[in-house]
Image (cartoon, rainbow, N blue to C red; front, side, top):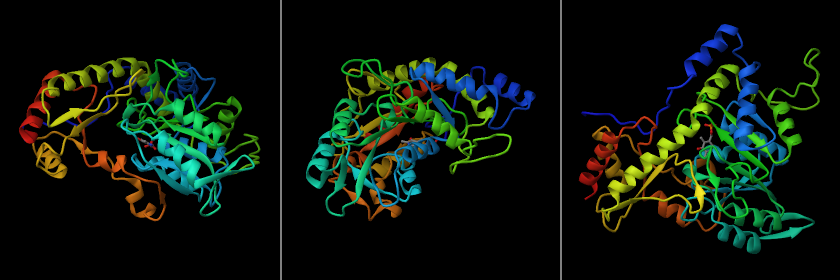
Length: 389
Ligand SMILES: *Cc1c(COP(=O)(O)O)cnc(C)c1O
């Protein structure tokens, strides 16, 4: 192994050390401190929303959103089949059940199938959507902006309105992606639905080690999520509580890292885009594979790159391709296994999952760290061509 090129590693070229050290020196390392509120304010500005609440993780941001939707035991929640499992697990935290939905060619939820599902498998009763087969209520829909690509939000929001569904946008992979035209022109991922969840885990476009944030269409709701995330304290001196809270608030140490990272976000997005175009340019002449595009008329953050392997033109199995790339020190990974095929969810409702299956057998994620050099990209493509052609 001559060279190791990681899939996605964090980049700390900015004020990270300075701010984290400052937080340590001040002694504010836990869930209180000025870096948390600063990060929240800067993030709200960036997203152009009234308020965000900083959280421990993207998962906790999604969980808080489901709680605000009043998702209860035995309820159904519509979720994507092709995504990271953290987008679905919080449904079970509420003792509710997922309904798995297919994707379209953007890898995000397919609105045509969603509509068909709502129209044929469900009925509306007193402003509630009911799954006909079991009589369970469906109140909420989670969409994921996969790899930084935006979901068709115009179609999704129309369906949600018609069928009385709350929309939670899992924007954990799409911080900075926005629409350029249409009804939501200028709107950022996570700011269109009723809730938007962000993640700052180690491999996301900006990181706080572990962390996340959540926003809501209603400022009051966002405020309430912050309250729930800090153990629902109604009196901080006498410790009075009127609700069951959670220990979901981000720490000041994480926020110090996050603030420095947020300063670099525009630069990171620029590099992600440049590197994406470099790959695309080098790969375009090969019929065996291509880089999947991002949705037209959007400005994506280009977080992760999806190499599409044309299996009619390549005899090797995807697993073999991945092994061979790994052996040369190029860290790649397959797209996730379908969640409806994972052990905890095999018995859940899965509605006509076809496109998700197709893509899950054909996509490999390529190295996409912001530090990757032009030479490294050329090397990855060189090896790719050897393996595939
Ligand atoms: C990363 C991720 C999450 C979870 O975020 P954490 O901060 O790791 O909890 C949820 N959904 C998707 C689609 C993700 O990629």
